[in-house]
Length: 140
Image (tube, rainbow, N blue to C red; front, side):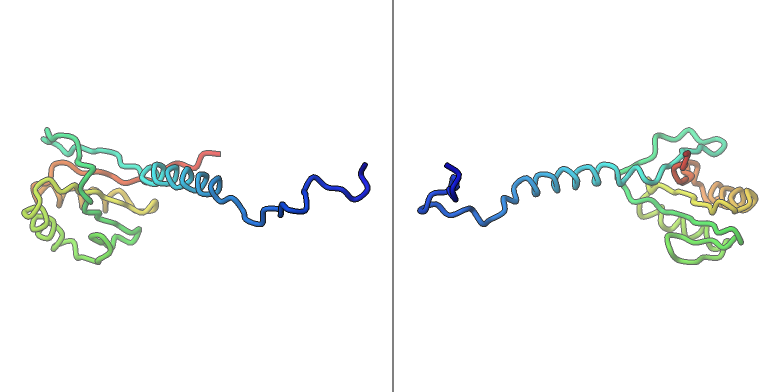
């Protein structure tokens, strides 16, 4: 009966390979999930400045991001810029691409005065539609 017999016969060897197909399936599903959720990590709030009757912001073009630190230092993308040069630089960028979206990203401790000054400079540069970048809330 059970005296040392197994269901494997002498001519069949046990399979020594791992079936990786289910692992690949799971990894592809995870990849798709991460690709779908990654753009949702940064939220944009659309803001229309006074006298702006602009269409919806373009999402298929990489935007110009103006970052403002709590101390008031200003950056375009990752490059530091003086505020008196900001309007001319943005106007030059928009000449090449008139529909280039402009986002303002302020530090959580940035006084509203700094953001209002940047918005005023952008309005003087002829930019009537901007977006304010926020982080998703971490409600418990």
